[in-house]
Length: 376
Image 1 (cartoon, rainbow, N blue to C red):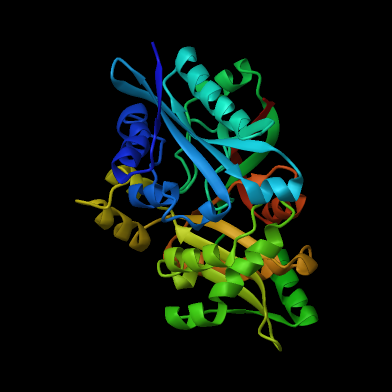
Image 2 (cartoon, rainbow, N blue to C red):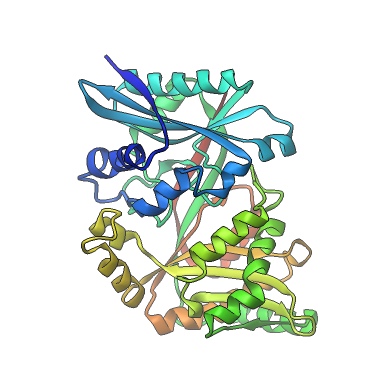
């Protein structure tokens, strides 16, 4: 018999919630990349995550014979619901053994929770905002997970379909072979559009100066660029301050590309990349101690894979070659650091503006993620 227990977001309870997939469900997986445990817990804590200013959540663990056999979170993002005029609950952090009784009980619990809040639809996996992992893996189960993305067993989608969920949207991921030189056509486009539009790329070696000059601008640009995308939740000023402190102190400045207007110094586009942390997180099992910090540090120094975390371009400059300027800047850097391949972040399958940029490269579309939805 399966017992579902709602847990309060104390550190002790959240450690159980976060460690279930790491230490039990995917303990022997070669492909599962655990999150950094401390970051995961802070995301789930209302006193640490500024998204709780406009979100509410509930967390549940499934037990059988005293052992955890599944977990799920229910989330309501009121900003997105208001923007889209929806009454939608999200399910997230869904993990379970291959057992219909377990997943049925988890989904039923979140369904009843959502209905009690007046919601009419259940969609997921989706996090609090787009800064959290999105989508369930439906292709690419034999590939190592991407840093910050969710891996899942092949039986997950089968249970979702059995429960009557249908596809809402898909995201695609690409493994790109980094060329030894910038593709000639891309370099021509970058040079021509840079001159025509008065744009240039800028690098920083002083992190404090970067934050002073463009810290806010980077995240406000993300808001502009992503505003029309599926389920986007605009970052609040409080969230922007939170993410500046969380991410910018650790980004390798060489791997950050910013396109600005030459005359006004306004930020037009940004490409954020980091060395892949996947193998380091696997070795450290998501923990910083005793050796996790060393594995992460080594990943920054010695790596042949770079993660393309995001590219954001002001809407009025999209499809005008700004992406070419970013890659014209980054490809020599990638070669200098010895990166041979790049992993894209997940990209909406219908976002032709983004997908078009890979036509310059040799690539493998190797993963697909899906958000499922159902009326409740």
